[in-house]
Length: 102
Image 1 (cartoon, rainbow, N blue to C red):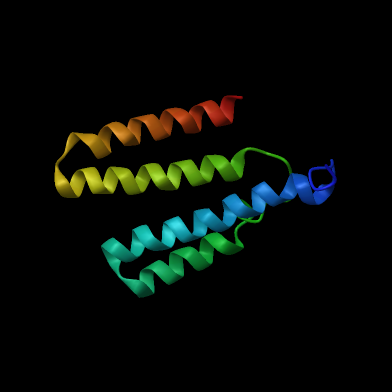
Image 2: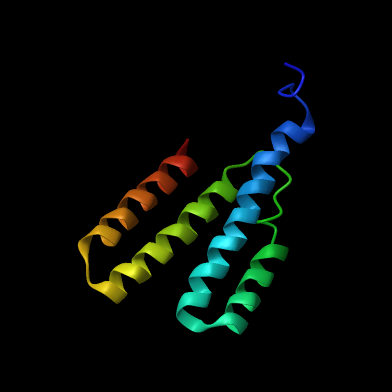
């Protein structure tokens, strides 16, 4: 298949998608708690940091995405007082540790 050849684009595309998804997830989580202005500020800062615009084949973008998701899950657990988001937080942090150590 020509579409999945070993090229620079095929290596960097997952990093770009994860960085974009990280900015979107952060925006949605911050907007829910603090409002639109804070969410735009946080997403804008994350969008220009080297973690979201990673040009290497490192796992830091995936780690950042998982930790942002874990933070949102932890906030939801604190808001609702339920166990399910707290257990999801533990699972997501465990996956983030696995991504970083692999």
